[in-house]
Image 1 (cartoon, rainbow, N blue to C red):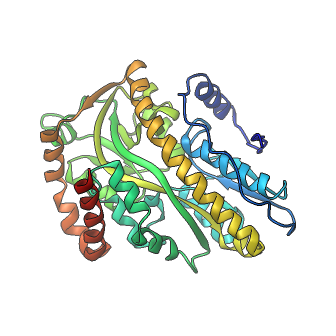
Image 2: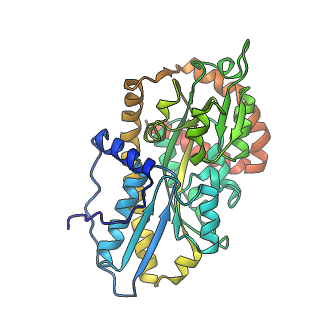
Image 3: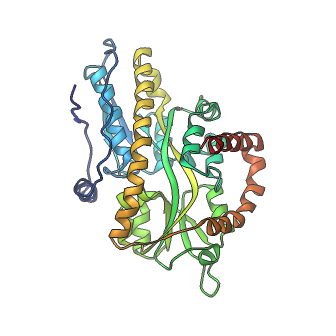
Length: 359
């Protein structure tokens, strides 16, 4: 069956502009897999409202459309999804709170924004924990990761699956950065770097000598444009789809943190669904997450090239330069490993090491 992509999307003027840019300049990404599986029985009709922070051109949005199409086709239109990108309904924290009260059905935040619900998720915020994308995906598919999803039970949130946010890179408008000293500034002030409201991220940038400034993602572009902050850190794909190159002259391929997204549903919405619908939602979530992971990698490499073509000066760090950053952030492990769980960290490091051994 041909995907119909008939999902409602509310668009602001800025969002319409962003959509036009994304569609005109998007890469050749893999098409979503064919939708198969039995049609579920008629258990009533439901409209599911999903909000998240990224734009219409992002892998997160494209995979959410695929998720919606699976539900629509396999329920014969009885399950429909309205997608609200671009932080239209609030930031990650606000939308998770809306899930708890039942005023929003689904959201798709970074794991870093959800650590107040499941503290173990902070393991993904530790710097340089996952040395390769292959190791990261293996961790996301592990029993340890499933335990973190299960730990949301009783919070008002049903965590469905992980997908890829990706490796975070530094961008700024002040100067090229190739070392921790460039972040701290020896003869000039340290960089003011926007972070999420996440204590581990704050600790990372404090260890590097920056002035970390927590801020909602939806406020970030204006803050950089007005000089409130010098820079930020996100995957290349997010930097591009958010048009940050318009207000950021320099990028550094630090790969300092790999974070996943968490697809979640309000427990109130989940409990209203028939068990057959619940099973379909869970299956569609996992299928769309696998697709998101695939196109995220494709998009991220392309995004870096596009940023350079559009004028961003990107510094690619060699192994010695990365090692200098790793050494500078060791105090973060000393501070946070006991609180996050040394056994959990060791388990994830072991998974990552086994992947490296197989390569």
